[in-house]
Each structure stands twice: as C-alpha cells, then as structure tokens.
Image 1 (cartoon, rainbow, N blue to C red):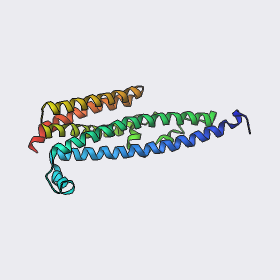
Image 2 (image 1 turned 120 degrees about the horizontal axis):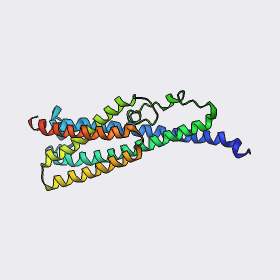
Image 3 (image 1 turned 60 degrees about the vertical axis):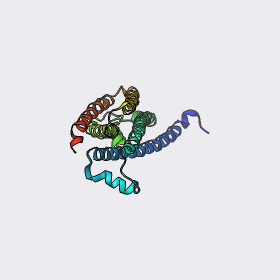
Image 4 (image 1 turned 120 degrees about the vertical axis):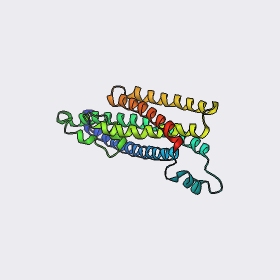
Length: 227
C-alpha cells in the first residue's frame, strides 16, 4: 500500500467516475423534466383555447362514462405543474453543484496540465435544461437555450394558473388557490435564485419567467373567451 500522496490520483479518479455517473443521472432527470414541461405547456394552451378538440379527446380517453370536467382537469394540472417546477429548481442546483465538483476534480487530477478552454467541451450536454443552466462560462451561447426554456416553463405556468380561473371563475376558493399557488411559486423562484444568484443566467431566468407568465395570463384573459 502506498502513501496518501501516492494514492491521491487513484482517489481523485474514483471520485471523477462517481461524479460523472451522478451527472449522467441528473442530465437524464432534467431531460424528463423538460419533456413534462413541454407537454404541460402544449396541453395547457390547447385546453385554454380549445385547440384541436382536446377536451373531447380527453372525454373519449379518460371520461368514457361522463363529460369533460374542466374543474377536475384544472385541479389536476396545477399540482402537477407545481411538482415538476419544484423538481426543476432542485435538479438544476444539483447539476451545477456536480459540475463545479467535476471541475475541481479535473484540476486536481490533471494538475498543471489542466486547461479550462480545452476541457470546455466536457461541459456540453444533450439535455436542453442542463444546457440552459450550464455552470461554465459558455459566453452568450446559453441565451437562446435559456429563453426557449423560459418560454416553455412560463407557458405551462400561465396555462396551469389560468385553467383554474377558467374552470372555477373568480371566487373566494379559486382566489385562495391562486394565492397559495402564487406563494409557492414565489418561494421556489426565490430559493432557486438564492442558490444561483452569483450567475447572471439565474437572474435572467427569473425575470424572463415573471415577464412571460404575466404576458401569457394577459393573452389568455383577452383571447380565451372568444376561442
């Protein structure tokens, strides 16, 4: 058995392998989360505007003995969105932490041979969400990814909230549900921003989300009634 100094490269290599496996799992989880948000955004908009006769398709598939229940659908879609949105911030935070640890391990393993520019391709990923919140430098390449991500998430968020208003109208119960959901969303946004506030993209993501969600809610309120 060698000394701790002699065994250090083997230890670092072992940690690199473990961390790489974790990054792969996080990328996979982020990709699944992204797909769910895309589905929620598409389904939400289709339900709000009654596009493609989706309510009748849902009746045929899930309510064969009854009619389409807008209140039941709204009560289901909103918690589903909140759940996956909560997971999104947690997964992104874990992903960036794993990336930072990977960089530290690479520097330790390669020592003087470490070149940040040459190792930059190692940070590229097949996950859309992971690319949006990539922890490295990446110049301004992240902006298109981040904007598209913000559009999809804000669309799903706006649709989930508006479906409640559309189904239950504005009464004390629907307002209570919307206020509670809004508080949960604000807490999640703050926790995400607070964990990533040293990165410009986190602030941009929160700003994009608020602006785009507000725009979607206004668009739904103006155009959904005549759809």
